[in-house]
Length: 224
Image 1 (cartoon, rainbow, N blue to C red):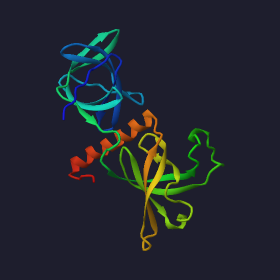
Image 2 (cartoon, helix red, strand yellow):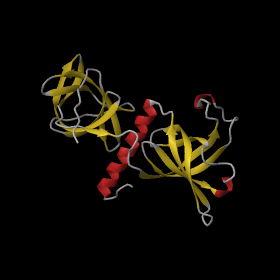
Image 3 (cartoon, rainbow, N blue to C red):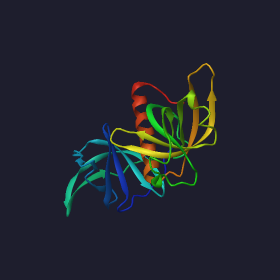
Image 4 (cartoon, one colour):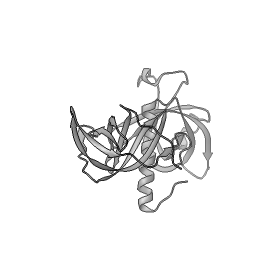
């Protein structure tokens, strides 16, 4: 479904590529095009070419929208800017009810007090343990934990989870809302929901989910 979206000067846009998302912002707007700064990702600039088709992500009115368009060209207006054709349609990316998709990687967890600020927690204040993520969505994730921790990790516990990504790692606060325990299995499965996500972390998770979904669609795999 297409959404009504308005481009704004200095609005945040990211260009989606195979190796990640390149950050940019809006410099100028006309009836025909949107002029953006050269997209950059970790110091690497994206040399978009005229007539190149691109997929973008736009942050507007506390929501995230995806669109497809084409590069119209470049021009210099104090800085070098890239002109992209105004998209015909936008797709709103759901922040909370995102589809759950497989995401299997080792993570580091710790039980914490709900009132603690994660930034104020020292390594000597809590006991860390390893877990394995099974899937993730914009609202939470499932974790597989060794059964030997069954008495230490319980439903309604608050966990600090550090998730490794390609170029960084993120640490999130989660609450266990469901426990799946099969006595025949050496692992216990915990369903969690994210708590107190800041805007940057939430956007990182949503982009991760969308990136995995895109790769799955290319390979003919679907999420739950």
